[in-house]
Length: 285
Ligand code: AMP
Ligand code: FE
Ligand code: FE
Ligand code: ZN
Image 1 (cartoon, rainbow, N blue to C red):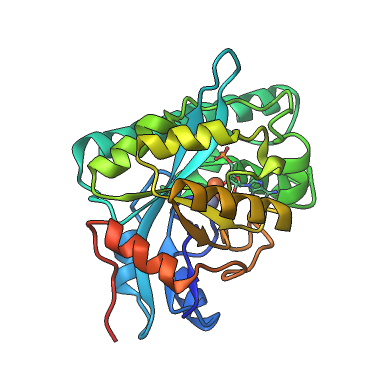
Image 2 (cartoon, rainbow, N blue to C red):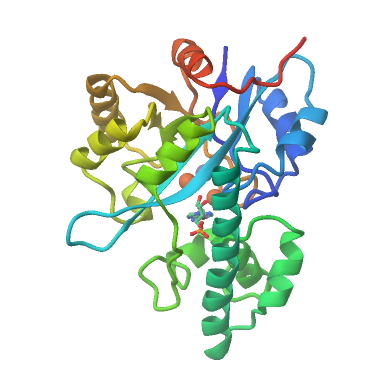
Protein backbone atom coordinates (compact mmCIF):
# COMPACT_ATOMS: atom_id res chain seq x y z
CA UNK A 1 0.00 0.00 0.00
CA UNK A 2 1.41 3.38 -1.02
CA UNK A 3 -0.38 6.30 0.58
CA UNK A 4 0.21 10.03 -0.04
CA UNK A 5 -1.94 12.24 2.19
CA UNK A 6 -1.07 15.77 1.05
CA UNK A 7 -1.43 17.10 -2.53
CA UNK A 8 -2.58 20.31 -4.22
CA UNK A 9 -4.46 20.77 -7.49
CA UNK A 10 -5.08 23.88 -9.58
CA UNK A 11 -8.16 24.44 -7.42
CA UNK A 12 -5.60 26.05 -5.10
CA UNK A 13 -1.90 26.50 -5.90
CA UNK A 14 -1.01 23.28 -7.71
CA UNK A 15 -0.90 23.01 -11.50
CA UNK A 16 -2.76 19.71 -12.20
CA UNK A 17 -6.54 19.80 -12.48
CA UNK A 18 -8.12 17.45 -9.89
CA UNK A 19 -8.66 14.90 -12.70
CA UNK A 20 -5.01 15.17 -13.79
CA UNK A 21 -3.88 14.89 -10.18
CA UNK A 22 -5.67 11.58 -9.54
CA UNK A 23 -4.29 10.26 -12.86
CA UNK A 24 -0.78 11.32 -11.77
CA UNK A 25 -1.32 9.57 -8.42
CA UNK A 26 -2.35 6.31 -10.09
CA UNK A 27 0.50 6.51 -12.60
CA UNK A 28 2.97 6.94 -9.72
CA UNK A 29 1.71 3.67 -8.24
CA UNK A 30 -0.22 5.15 -5.33
CA UNK A 31 -3.07 3.16 -3.80
CA UNK A 32 -4.36 6.11 -1.77
CA UNK A 33 -4.15 9.85 -2.37
CA UNK A 34 -5.62 12.72 -0.37
CA UNK A 35 -6.54 15.94 -2.16
CA UNK A 36 -5.73 18.75 0.28
CA UNK A 37 -6.10 22.07 -1.48
CA UNK A 38 -5.63 25.24 0.56
CA UNK A 39 -8.82 26.45 2.25
CA UNK A 40 -11.23 24.82 -0.20
CA UNK A 41 -13.05 21.56 -0.92
CA UNK A 42 -13.90 22.68 -4.47
CA UNK A 43 -11.81 19.93 -6.09
CA UNK A 44 -13.37 16.96 -4.32
CA UNK A 45 -16.16 16.25 -6.81
CA UNK A 46 -13.98 16.48 -9.92
CA UNK A 47 -11.32 14.24 -8.32
CA UNK A 48 -13.94 11.64 -7.37
CA UNK A 49 -15.53 11.75 -10.82
CA UNK A 50 -12.16 11.10 -12.47
CA UNK A 51 -10.99 8.38 -10.03
CA UNK A 52 -8.88 5.75 -11.81
CA UNK A 53 -9.74 2.12 -10.93
CA UNK A 54 -7.95 0.92 -7.81
CA UNK A 55 -7.19 4.37 -6.40
CA UNK A 56 -8.71 5.45 -3.10
CA UNK A 57 -9.25 9.20 -2.78
CA UNK A 58 -9.36 10.79 0.66
CA UNK A 59 -11.19 14.13 0.75
CA UNK A 60 -9.05 16.63 2.61
CA UNK A 61 -7.93 20.21 2.87
CA UNK A 62 -5.07 22.30 4.23
CA UNK A 63 -6.30 25.09 6.49
CA UNK A 64 -4.22 28.28 6.76
CA UNK A 65 -3.65 28.93 10.46
CA UNK A 66 -1.60 30.89 12.98
CA UNK A 67 -0.28 29.99 16.39
CA UNK A 68 -0.09 32.84 18.89
CA UNK A 69 2.90 32.48 21.24
CA UNK A 70 2.67 34.60 24.40
CA UNK A 71 4.29 37.99 23.81
CA UNK A 72 5.56 37.18 20.30
CA UNK A 73 4.22 37.70 16.78
CA UNK A 74 2.01 34.89 15.43
CA UNK A 75 3.61 31.92 13.66
CA UNK A 76 2.12 30.69 10.38
CA UNK A 77 1.09 27.02 10.63
CA UNK A 78 -0.81 24.72 8.29
CA UNK A 79 -3.42 22.26 9.47
CA UNK A 80 -4.38 19.31 7.31
CA UNK A 81 -7.99 18.20 7.72
CA UNK A 82 -9.42 14.91 6.49
CA UNK A 83 -12.83 13.27 6.19
CA UNK A 84 -14.83 16.20 7.58
CA UNK A 85 -18.33 17.36 6.65
CA UNK A 86 -17.81 20.05 3.99
CA UNK A 87 -21.22 21.53 4.84
CA UNK A 88 -20.54 22.10 8.55
CA UNK A 89 -21.67 25.76 8.70
CA UNK A 90 -19.04 27.33 10.98
CA UNK A 91 -16.16 25.55 9.24
CA UNK A 92 -17.50 26.39 5.76
CA UNK A 93 -17.86 30.03 6.83
CA UNK A 94 -14.27 30.16 8.06
CA UNK A 95 -13.00 28.83 4.71
CA UNK A 96 -14.92 31.60 2.91
CA UNK A 97 -13.29 34.18 5.21
CA UNK A 98 -9.82 32.72 4.53
CA UNK A 99 -10.31 32.79 0.77
CA UNK A 100 -11.40 36.43 0.92
CA UNK A 101 -8.40 37.19 3.12
CA UNK A 102 -6.12 35.59 0.50
CA UNK A 103 -7.55 37.89 -2.16
CA UNK A 104 -7.04 41.13 -0.23
CA UNK A 105 -3.57 40.04 0.86
CA UNK A 106 -2.52 38.93 -2.62
CA UNK A 107 -3.68 42.24 -4.00
CA UNK A 108 -1.62 44.09 -1.36
CA UNK A 109 1.55 42.19 -2.36
CA UNK A 110 0.97 42.72 -6.09
CA UNK A 111 0.06 46.40 -5.70
CA UNK A 112 3.29 47.00 -3.76
CA UNK A 113 5.32 45.17 -6.43
CA UNK A 114 3.62 47.10 -9.26
CA UNK A 115 4.21 50.41 -7.46
CA UNK A 116 7.94 49.65 -7.58
CA UNK A 117 7.80 48.90 -11.29
CA UNK A 118 7.42 45.12 -11.33
CA UNK A 119 5.35 44.24 -14.42
CA UNK A 120 2.57 42.36 -12.58
CA UNK A 121 -1.13 43.06 -12.52
CA UNK A 122 -3.55 41.75 -9.90
CA UNK A 123 -6.57 41.39 -12.22
CA UNK A 124 -4.50 39.25 -14.57
CA UNK A 125 -3.27 37.01 -11.74
CA UNK A 126 -6.82 36.49 -10.48
CA UNK A 127 -8.03 35.74 -14.00
CA UNK A 128 -5.26 33.17 -14.49
CA UNK A 129 -6.12 31.43 -11.21
CA UNK A 130 -9.39 30.50 -12.96
CA UNK A 131 -11.52 30.70 -9.82
CA UNK A 132 -8.94 28.82 -7.74
CA UNK A 133 -7.71 29.82 -4.31
CA UNK A 134 -4.98 32.40 -4.93
CA UNK A 135 -1.63 32.13 -3.19
CA UNK A 136 1.93 33.35 -3.59
CA UNK A 137 2.66 30.63 -6.20
CA UNK A 138 0.24 32.46 -8.55
CA UNK A 139 2.19 35.69 -8.07
CA UNK A 140 5.42 33.75 -8.56
CA UNK A 141 4.13 32.39 -11.89
CA UNK A 142 3.28 35.91 -13.04
CA UNK A 143 6.81 37.05 -12.14
CA UNK A 144 8.25 34.13 -14.13
CA UNK A 145 5.99 34.90 -17.11
CA UNK A 146 7.06 38.56 -16.98
CA UNK A 147 10.71 37.50 -17.05
CA UNK A 148 11.48 39.04 -13.64
CA UNK A 149 12.74 35.72 -12.24
CA UNK A 150 13.46 32.46 -13.98
CA UNK A 151 11.64 30.13 -11.61
CA UNK A 152 8.91 29.97 -8.97
CA UNK A 153 11.65 29.00 -6.49
CA UNK A 154 13.59 32.16 -7.35
CA UNK A 155 10.50 34.29 -6.73
CA UNK A 156 10.01 32.66 -3.31
CA UNK A 157 13.70 33.17 -2.50
CA UNK A 158 13.51 36.91 -3.27
CA UNK A 159 10.50 39.25 -3.56
CA UNK A 160 7.94 36.71 -2.25
CA UNK A 161 10.06 35.56 0.70
CA UNK A 162 8.35 36.00 4.06
CA UNK A 163 11.10 38.47 4.99
CA UNK A 164 10.78 40.47 1.74
CA UNK A 165 9.52 44.06 2.09
CA UNK A 166 6.75 43.10 -0.32
CA UNK A 167 5.49 40.25 1.85
CA UNK A 168 2.09 40.66 3.49
CA UNK A 169 0.71 38.29 6.11
CA UNK A 170 -2.82 36.89 6.10
CA UNK A 171 -5.23 36.92 9.06
CA UNK A 172 -5.29 33.13 9.23
CA UNK A 173 -7.35 31.04 11.66
CA UNK A 174 -6.08 30.61 15.22
CA UNK A 175 -4.85 27.02 14.96
CA UNK A 176 -6.53 26.00 18.24
CA UNK A 177 -9.87 27.22 16.82
CA UNK A 178 -9.04 25.48 13.53
CA UNK A 179 -8.48 22.17 15.32
CA UNK A 180 -11.80 22.53 17.15
CA UNK A 181 -13.62 23.39 13.90
CA UNK A 182 -12.22 20.34 12.09
CA UNK A 183 -13.24 18.11 15.00
CA UNK A 184 -16.70 19.73 15.20
CA UNK A 185 -17.10 18.92 11.49
CA UNK A 186 -16.20 15.28 12.19
CA UNK A 187 -12.75 15.52 10.65
CA UNK A 188 -9.20 14.51 11.51
CA UNK A 189 -6.81 17.45 12.12
CA UNK A 190 -3.13 16.77 11.37
CA UNK A 191 -0.35 19.33 11.89
CA UNK A 192 1.35 19.85 8.48
CA UNK A 193 5.15 20.17 8.02
CA UNK A 194 5.51 21.43 11.60
CA UNK A 195 9.30 21.79 11.66
CA UNK A 196 9.83 23.16 8.15
CA UNK A 197 12.09 26.08 9.05
CA UNK A 198 12.47 27.08 5.37
CA UNK A 199 8.92 28.44 5.64
CA UNK A 200 9.65 30.74 8.59
CA UNK A 201 9.55 30.43 12.36
CA UNK A 202 8.27 27.12 13.69
CA UNK A 203 6.43 26.34 16.91
CA UNK A 204 7.92 24.60 19.96
CA UNK A 205 6.95 21.33 21.63
CA UNK A 206 4.75 23.26 24.09
CA UNK A 207 2.60 24.51 21.18
CA UNK A 208 2.21 21.01 19.77
CA UNK A 209 1.16 19.76 23.22
CA UNK A 210 -1.36 22.62 23.39
CA UNK A 211 -2.65 21.65 19.96
CA UNK A 212 -2.98 18.02 21.08
CA UNK A 213 -4.98 19.16 24.11
CA UNK A 214 -7.27 21.11 21.74
CA UNK A 215 -8.01 17.94 19.77
CA UNK A 216 -5.18 17.52 17.26
CA UNK A 217 -5.05 13.87 16.13
CA UNK A 218 -1.92 13.64 14.00
CA UNK A 219 1.41 15.07 12.92
CA UNK A 220 2.90 15.05 9.43
CA UNK A 221 6.29 13.53 10.12
CA UNK A 222 7.67 12.57 6.71
CA UNK A 223 7.58 15.68 4.52
CA UNK A 224 10.09 16.85 1.88
CA UNK A 225 10.84 19.99 3.93
CA UNK A 226 11.83 17.99 7.05
CA UNK A 227 15.37 16.72 7.61
CA UNK A 228 15.97 13.17 8.86
CA UNK A 229 16.62 14.56 12.36
CA UNK A 230 13.42 16.60 12.33
CA UNK A 231 11.46 13.52 11.24
CA UNK A 232 12.91 11.42 14.03
CA UNK A 233 12.20 14.17 16.54
CA UNK A 234 8.58 14.63 15.41
CA UNK A 235 7.99 10.87 15.29
CA UNK A 236 9.01 10.56 18.94
CA UNK A 237 7.08 13.67 19.96
CA UNK A 238 3.92 12.41 18.24
CA UNK A 239 4.25 8.98 19.84
CA UNK A 240 4.64 10.61 23.25
CA UNK A 241 1.45 12.64 22.74
CA UNK A 242 -0.49 9.68 21.33
CA UNK A 243 -0.84 11.31 17.89
CA UNK A 244 -0.89 9.46 14.60
CA UNK A 245 1.98 10.02 12.17
CA UNK A 246 1.64 10.69 8.48
CA UNK A 247 3.96 11.10 5.52
CA UNK A 248 3.22 12.94 2.30
CA UNK A 249 4.69 14.73 -0.69
CA UNK A 250 2.86 18.10 -0.57
CA UNK A 251 2.79 17.78 -4.38
CA UNK A 252 2.02 21.07 -6.20
CA UNK A 253 2.43 19.94 -9.84
CA UNK A 254 5.04 21.97 -11.68
CA UNK A 255 4.88 24.80 -9.10
CA UNK A 256 7.30 22.74 -6.99
CA UNK A 257 9.92 20.20 -7.88
CA UNK A 258 8.75 17.52 -5.44
CA UNK A 259 7.11 14.58 -7.24
CA UNK A 260 3.90 12.99 -5.98
CA UNK A 261 4.53 10.10 -3.54
CA UNK A 262 7.91 11.59 -2.51
CA UNK A 263 6.95 10.69 1.08
CA UNK A 264 4.23 8.26 2.12
CA UNK A 265 2.13 7.19 5.13
CA UNK A 266 2.33 3.78 6.81
CA UNK A 267 -0.86 1.70 6.34
CA UNK A 268 -1.47 1.28 10.09
CA UNK A 269 -1.41 5.06 10.56
CA UNK A 270 -3.81 5.48 7.65
CA UNK A 271 -6.18 2.93 9.21
CA UNK A 272 -6.16 4.99 12.42
CA UNK A 273 -6.90 8.13 10.47
CA UNK A 274 -9.82 6.46 8.67
CA UNK A 275 -11.26 5.27 11.96
CA UNK A 276 -11.01 8.76 13.48
CA UNK A 277 -12.92 10.63 10.74
CA UNK A 278 -16.67 10.61 10.15
CA UNK A 279 -16.38 11.12 6.38
CA UNK A 280 -15.69 8.31 3.93
CA UNK A 281 -13.00 8.11 1.28
CA UNK A 282 -13.96 7.55 -2.35
CA UNK A 283 -13.21 3.90 -2.97
CA UNK A 284 -14.30 1.01 -5.08
CA UNK A 285 -12.52 -1.38 -7.39
P1 AMP B 1 0.71 31.51 0.64
O1 AMP B 1 -0.24 30.43 1.11
O2 AMP B 1 0.06 32.40 -0.34
O3 AMP B 1 1.40 32.24 1.75
O4 AMP B 1 1.86 30.79 -0.18
C1 AMP B 1 2.51 29.71 0.41
C2 AMP B 1 2.40 28.52 -0.50
O5 AMP B 1 3.45 28.57 -1.41
C3 AMP B 1 2.50 27.19 0.23
O6 AMP B 1 1.45 26.36 -0.19
C4 AMP B 1 3.78 26.59 -0.21
O7 AMP B 1 3.63 25.22 -0.43
C5 AMP B 1 4.08 27.31 -1.48
N1 AMP B 1 5.52 27.50 -1.61
C6 AMP B 1 6.41 27.84 -0.68
N2 AMP B 1 7.66 27.90 -1.18
C7 AMP B 1 7.54 27.58 -2.48
C8 AMP B 1 8.47 27.46 -3.56
N3 AMP B 1 9.76 27.69 -3.39
N4 AMP B 1 7.98 27.11 -4.75
C9 AMP B 1 6.66 26.90 -4.92
N5 AMP B 1 5.75 26.99 -3.96
C10 AMP B 1 6.18 27.32 -2.75
FE1 FE C 1 0.61 25.44 -1.48
FE1 FE D 1 1.43 23.69 3.72
ZN1 ZN E 1 0.45 21.84 1.23
